[in-house]
Length: 271
Image 1 (cartoon, rainbow, N blue to C red):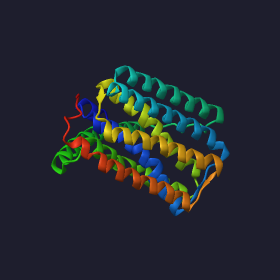
Image 2 (image 1 turned 90 degrees about the vertical axis):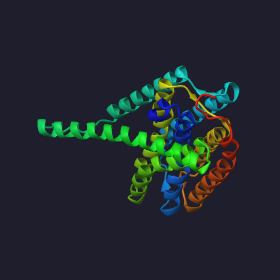
Image 3 (image 1 turned 120 degrees about the vertical axis):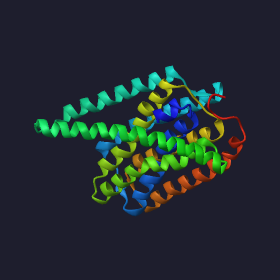
């Protein structure tokens, strides 16, 4: 995501964040509910509601800010999002400490070096692959005559949500519902604060509003529908999963038609 911002592909950066957040709730958790169903425990509902409300408020602010100024996010908004992420991470750490954690196993020097090596290789791999993904997405958008925001909100967003799909389906199948929900909703919080905040702080994100506004609205709708079902019913059945998947299909149809209005407009790289 930072790569796409540095390359001034703001439409891809913003589209990816909100497209991924929508996919995590409507597509990933929708598939999980449709296949297996899952419960939302009362012990998870408070944290779930906090994150969903925070991401919703941030989305609404960005929507109104972009409608008024034409700019999605600048340096100061990015810095504020990073501060929100720091608060969120600190809150999680404090909660872990209060709940208590098993003492960590002491790691030997060889194991430590190996872990550091794999970590470094992973960082390099992510940087190279992210540059490849962004360049390929831009070329694909140009070749197919599609808006860059549409590519970011669909193909790249679904691709970045595949790890969540794999983890959450396994967690739901094993009835580890807290893990599944924490992965999906927590990922959305990280996307909209750390990822989008860092991208905006590196380079201001300027977007055209057709697809971007629709993605923001659907992100808010996805959060509110999910929170309503979780709070009222406390569980997601097959019909609820089909509802989420139906909303995701509607989202794809809407932004597919809206993106035609962006294709012939100037690039979203700053105007």
